[in-house]
Length: 395
Image 1 (cartoon, rainbow, N blue to C red):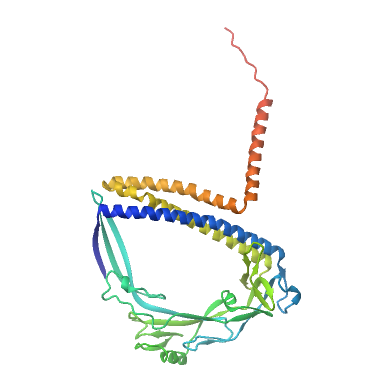
Image 2 (image 1 turned 180 degrees about the vertical axis):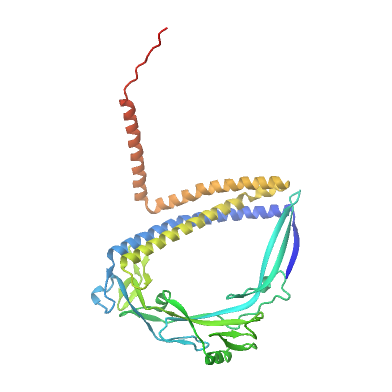
């Protein structure tokens, strides 16, 4: 099922949108520059905190709490034991010994997809032909059908059962107590096979006129799982388990909490299984590097898009004659790329210099000395070269 419409945008409307785009472009460039600058400080402070933490962390036996380590940054490894039982509050689904119980819900619903094709006209206007198509899919999030181009016949109901996750408040790692979510985030998920009694109990607690039935260890809300209808639901439960874990944090009584380093950054590291302190700090440094580059790339893309929007008005002006507008856009894209490759690295360098001025000056100084040394050696070699004899020809 599909629907197609064609709309025309006048040159004056495009011109107005181009002016707005220019303003948005300026804002986007400034925001991207700010985040690039901020990211360098974040990366350096995180690096410094991790270096400081790695230099003073103490690996201790998790089997008992030693008061002598109170307030110290410690590393522990030990078996995980949840404190208390997690229970789904609506349907009383229990998982003995689990760190968390997660309720996953999917609904069969309408999904809209669109494809557009634009043709430019002499005089600057353009015609856009858009085809909207509709299909039914299972999705764990509700698709808002009120935003569809064609709403009639494509209405999606609300979820009769919401997704939910319940986590233990605390868990023990050896003799130490940690926040339950910090431990549960490290665990593995395993499906809980529901029984007919579970399905019957759920049927009594769901406000729906659709049948609620057990289907291969899950609950299906609808007439037929092989011929689903819009609004049908699939509900399954998962438990989170973890046998052993490793943590780095400050010993505070019998708890392990985040420790604040001298630069104000907090250090709290976690890993599933048995890992020594050096490996955990190396992993944290690697993650810091990855995050730094992700933000750098995102910032550069933001600057490029900002310059594209900033120069977009020139393309709109050129669209009076369509092929000229395309040429102008090609040229402004190149200019935007060049400016991005100038502004982005300079912002990163300035941020790096601002947060580590002494090291930056030392690197610059070393570079100047190396360059001066190479120039000196080259001049010395030139001065030491023997003069070549001049041979005069005989006439």
